[in-house]
Amino acid sequence: MLTILVIFAFFWVTNVISAVTGKHIFSSDEKDIKNFVKCLNDKNVKIYGVKGEKNTELQIAMFGEEGKNLNLIDCSIENDQCLGVVFFPSWEIKGRPVFGAMSLEVISRLSDCKL
Image (tube, rainbow, N blue to C red; front, side):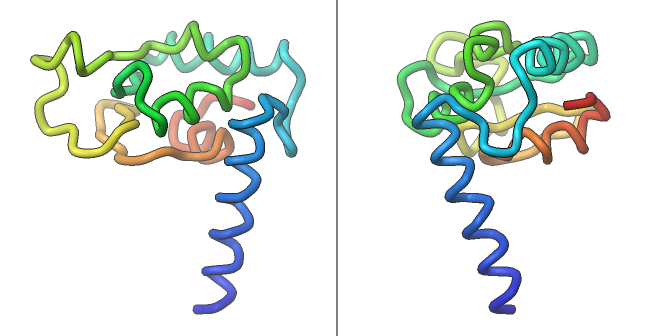
């Protein structure tokens, strides 16, 4: 159990550092992120959040400059599309809801988009 907590804490800390600094610790270059976001959009992956809300902004920041190109459904404006969304950010990947912020690696694995 302790091992799982340590691994979770490690990934959480690296994600926060990436979001705050805009630098991805285990990441690819900007071209890879651009292709990653294009793949997500091609597969109709959606992120549900609220612009200006801390967790949504941190998740988007993990994508660097390409974060502005994500398929963001702003629930403060398009609340009719956000029925059932209980956490921000939340994702729709392959037609299934996934609640909460995730690392780019997890998003990659769930979406089958190469990072």
